[in-house]
Each structure stands twice: as structure tokens, then as C-alpha cells.
Amino acid sequence: MNVPRTRVQRRPVHGVLLLDKPLGLSSNQALQKAKWLLRAEKAGHTGTLDPLATGVLPLCFGAGTKFSQLHLDADKTYETTVRLGLKTSTGDAEGDVISVREVSCSAGKVMEVLDLFMGAIQQVPPMHSALKKNGKALYEYAREGETVEREARNVVIHDLELLDLQLQGDAPFLRLRVRCSKGTYIRTLGEDIAEALGCGGHLSCLRRVVTGPFDASQCVSLLALEGMSEEERLGALLAVDVLLPDHTQVGLDSDNAGRFLSGVRRRGPWLDCDHVAVYGEHPRALLGTAHVRGGELIPGRLLSPIEIQQILEKSPVNEPLLAEQV
Image 1: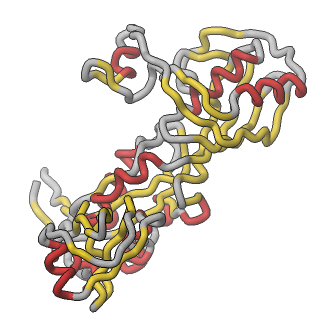
Image 2: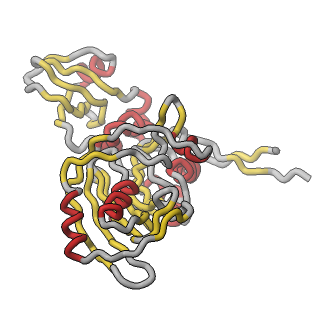
Image 3: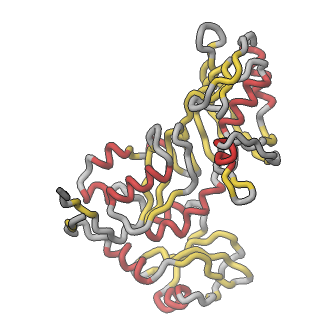
């Protein structure tokens, strides 16, 4: 017997949801769950977190997806625990233990080693990562038991703080807070630190607490989102322009705004600037991004007139769910 299934009717939703990604879900699984709860037509994220990582995952909806790429370059901060003495096949708790060594380092040695990893360093990306080689993700090679050559990458560790440590007992560990540049693999950092201590190790947990201008205190969990009403879920969204915190703001009157949205450069008394957020003045609404050269405002990523109107009107929240036979 086939039972009727409720299908969600999608709708235009525009904004940014700061999600506290739960343990065990991939970033895409978390995105799809939030997208379903909001009944959004279009969604994307600003960079992935591993299933075994939790924390700040900005999700972009509708017009917000046009600016999600800007946050791939953002600095990020993580809190992580490195389990010392046990090296695993994946560098985290998901892998098999492949090496067991005694932990004999001192707290002083730990501080010396951490200093070595401050500033500009090079990392070899882990095999268990989504980075691609010859069109194939590294983790796919790893699952087939194959190791391929990877080039070292330059990253920057801005701050590396020791939050706690235990060097004795059955489960020695370091707990670290790391502020780093884009492209940093915390799993690799933890493994490299443990190797430098002479005992090896792996990440037993990882949490992203800051990405760009967003921190964990601003986030909502999927569980909380599930418990909200439709109005409350939409109310949890931040405006699209939170993705443009470092952009210089420029306002245009209605005539110039219309031309700008058509991709036409506008001339004005503006200084050269690489990152500009352009607004229509009456009513005030984000039009898109631009840069200024020689007094010309040159369009970049633009919202459509329909998107702007939908944002101004706010998305309706009382649309019915449709039922269909499957």
C-alpha cells in the first residue's frame, strides 16, 4: 500500500543562516536539512566542515549564494583536541590505529614545538580530503588504498594557543585553539605537532568557533531550527549584506540604480576601491557588488530586480504544503 507523502513547496528565501553544524553530518547534509526546513529554492555554503567537525557553518540562501565565494578566503578559528600516542589512518578518530607510541614529552617541549608551527608554514594535504587530483578527490584514492603525491601548500597560523594538556595516563592529549588562514588542514596540523613531539597522534575532536566575522555564539542548531515556527525560521536569517562586512558602501539614486543593475558603469566622486557594496537609496536595498577605478563604479555580482523586490517584501510564510501520491 502506497502512503501519501507530503512534498515541500519551495519558495524564494534570501539571507544567511549561521548554523552550528552537528557531529556526524556532512556540510551538504546539514545544508539540505536547513534548506528543507526553510523550504528554500536555492542554497549553498561558504566552505565545508568534515562530518566529524562541529561549529560555525554559514549557509547562504537565494541572493546570498552570489556572495558565498567571498568567504572561502576568510580566516578561521578552531578548537581541537589532539590525542597523543595513537596515529590513525585518517588523522582523526574515524580511522584505524596504525601506530602506538609512548608519550614522553614535557610541557616545556610542547610549548617549544607549538612555537615552531606559528606563522607561515607548509602543509602536505591529507589523503583523506576533498582536494582533487586529476579530477578525482584524494579521499577516493585513499579508499582504494592508493597514495598519490601531493604538493605542499603555504598556509598561515596566526595564533596557536594551548588550552589544556595531559601528558600522563591512558589518554594523553593537547587541547588547542588555532586561528589560521584559508586552506589550513587542522587534522594535518595536529598530526605534524604530534610527530614533532615524537609520539604521533590524531584529532579526536574538532570545532570551528569563528569564520570570518561570524562566531559560534551567533549560530543556531538544526535541532533548534526544527522546533521553530515558519516565522521564527525566517527570522533566524541574517540579511544578505552580512556577507560584505569589509565592503565600502555606495548609494545610488533610482535612475543610476536602474542603470547599474543593467550592468552599466556609473561615474561619480568615488575613490578607487576594490570592494564596494552598492545600494539603491529609495528604498534602501542592496543591488550588488562593484569596484571603483578612475571614478567609475564597475558592476560585479548583481542581484536581479526580482530578488531585490522579494527581499524588500520579505518572503511569505503562510504558503501551504502540497501533498502528492508517490
